[in-house]
Amino acid sequence: MDTLIKLKKLQEEQKKIKVGLVGTGQMGKVLVSQMRNVPGMEVVFLCSRTAKKAKDTFENGGISSFDIIEINKKSEAEDAVSNGKYAVTDDYRLLTECENLDVIVEATGNVEVGADIAYRSILHQKHTVMLNVEADVTVGNYLNHLAQKNHVTYTGTAGDEPGAILDLVRFAENMGLEVIVAGKGKNNPLNVHAVAEDVLEAAKIKGTNPTMLTSFVDGTKTMIEMNAVANAIGFLPDKRGMHGVKSDVAGLNRIFSLKEEGGILDGYRRVDFVNGIAPGVFVIVTTKNKDVVDLMKYLSLGDGPNYTLYRPYHLTCLETPITIANAYFNGMATIAPKGKTPFAETVAVAKRDLMPGESLDEIGGYTVYGTLETFEKAKKENMLPVGLCDAGIKVKKAIKRDTVLTYDMVEITKESEKVRLRKLQDALIDSAE
Image 1: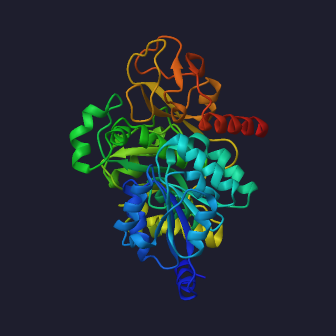
Image 2: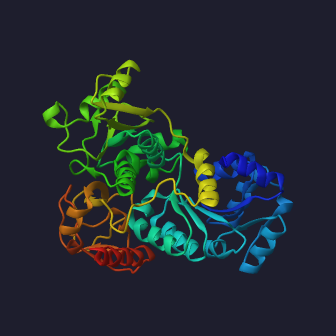
């Protein structure tokens, strides 16, 4: 049965998928408001840094203040949700433990918080939707393994670029075409050394956090997004950091061919990004079937053997209800890591010269940027994942700018939740080898 039909049937039966959401930034705020228009599902429990901000977000979405209840313990949450009220809290543990929720959406963008929320949600048998790709590429293989053991779905979201790419991959493979490259456009010129001061004016215009915008400009976000795609479909970066060429859509299938075919690639089954086609995503497909080649030419897709399938938009959190419904009804992930072992790793690189005793900061900060490497090489050379970086890691030796950080260059001074989960993931990987 079509998912929308199932949602409308729930609505007719005066039932709904009860969603808990953590995070009231731009994505969270829009999701609360927009889901009021989606039949058969609704955000009923909201967590933010302050309960007041969560309450304001609900009210912005058209919910009466009389129907919003601030929660301080688990029983209050369950009573509120059971009675058709809307719960708010500043303690995400209460949300993950609420028995009356069906799906939890994590939208904080913080690796530490996001990893813990996903872990707790899965243990409480909740389908878990991650708008937090940073946490996913850091510990997602373990979280997905844990979800499978607990018979729930762990997934990234439709509408984010990795999810949109996976939609194209499935579209192509369902037609019997072979996908050989998957990629996305990048909105802004790459400046790996960018810091918040460089983007303040742009951040003000966009109404976004300067640290978040920095993670886009310095390329870390792009690396992380393509890391998620690589882990989901088993593709690799062709070289460290990918190629990041400039092209229009028409040139993609020529550029992303093998070197001996006039392109730039050493091999196929690759992920990459392109300046000049944002905000779109693409896959390069091929076929050995002569009849299909003839039809592709007739359809004005070129002479082959490689063809471009391009989607010129991705609608971020507006598409998240699709993921929620598929997880709830079908146990289907939009995008999730494939197997126990990652295929790629976004590793930390010094954004400036670093001195012994300095603490690192997080993604979009002043000390590191991320670049994409194969997981095999990252593990062999003991490279530090950028998602683990924060003030709990100190530099042990002088590190020159643009040097890839390794575990032996730093000291982990705080046993954070993401570090604990990463150790569990590393043990899982070792057990699979």
